[in-house]
Length: 165
Image 1 (cartoon, rainbow, N blue to C red):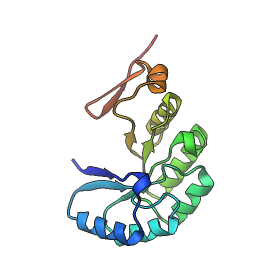
Image 2 (tube, helix red, strand yellow; image 1 turned 90 degrees about the vertical axis):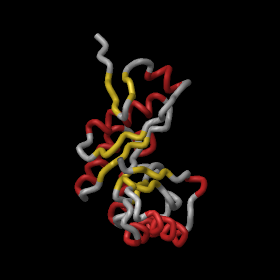
Image 3 (spheres, rainbow, N blue to C red; image 1 turned 180 degrees about the vertical axis):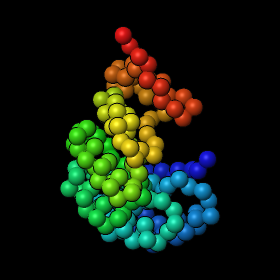
Image 4 (tube, rainbow, N blue to C red; image 1 turned 45 degrees about the vertical axis):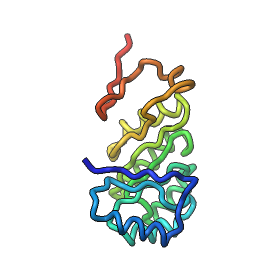
């Protein structure tokens, strides 16, 4: 199974460092490398994408289709990571997902907010034809568990919705 490298956004690299590291990782079967540059660096992402064979993922913090338009026009990501809570809700998420799908790009939902955010992103991920993965917390508590409760079960890399009647 291909691996994903998720780079923490508070420790981003400059473009030269990112190119060097990703070139070194090219022999390995990575599904994608997530956000090695600061999330606002559209020009850097466009150059990084041209400089490596490793698929680049990003966009967790982009806040609407206007920002996504710029990153999409510059061909920054192989895999976009919209988050319905940041992007402007379910409708705006679906516009972004369709924009990326129109360019042959996949999405990996980003759902690290509280319960409502999590559920929005799960629903959008299942509604989008270009979803590669759903990125959700492996263990949640507090506002996650209070809202989500027992509406679904995540196990063995699958999400099973539990019917309630």
